[in-house]
Length: 346
Image (tube, helix red, strand yellow):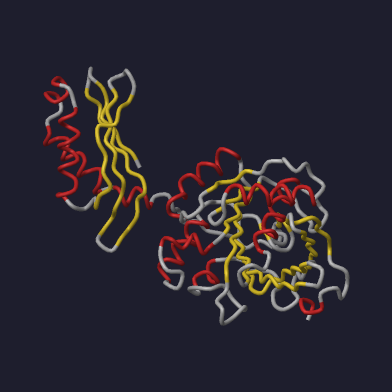
């Protein structure tokens, strides 16, 4: 939200607010005051503040006024800057809420089934959580799905293709690069084929959200992969509803499809560890089932257990891949043979 005041013959004062949010104590925002005298805009000062508090507003206005030149201060008294900042802040929340507009919506029988990006696990504009115990193959599987979408390969699932964006919150960049080369090679792609990634090991979603939004716009991203919700939870404990809702809200506000990896608790493999807000906020929850065979082959199966608008439950959308490993890492990916992994099929 922004507003501007013209100083005739001198320049323009601009008020700008971002990161606008309603908190328990009132409306908070990052407020920036700038000046442009025709030779390019400059920032006078800024602050993250409670916009309803005069004690927050007036010091910012005073600091900015002091940065102006003598002519500007004469034409634009400090009291006027304080008053205009107060007026700007008083209308801030109303302007921000103006983004939302109600309308009459007619039901339509012409709307087809959900538009899949990768059937049946990734739906256009929707959120998917893939969960299992740690060390069961989630990261490899997510990277395979990401590469399949990124290249439009039809080897394992029907996909419309699109631009994948992989957010690494857990591993070193060298580890991820090694895994990507292995996945590329196993899919018949050049090992050095690139994939758009954000390396943010040890960071939380709240720290990288703006960078992710920027990259989605700049690169035309179709689906975002987050590895994993455990690290995204740096915004708070995963068992707290507020933290869980904040993570889901950030992911849903990205405006594109997203796939997030999640761990289960030691006590149960039946659901994502943490608040029920994860289940409530995702459009699909997909359980990863795995079985290790003698000789090193790992079977990984995906089944949709909770979903909006499509079938879910045991066996729904079940697909099993066989991943072969040796001492260097992943060496082969293929569809599992019937009855090859009876524990998963069962």
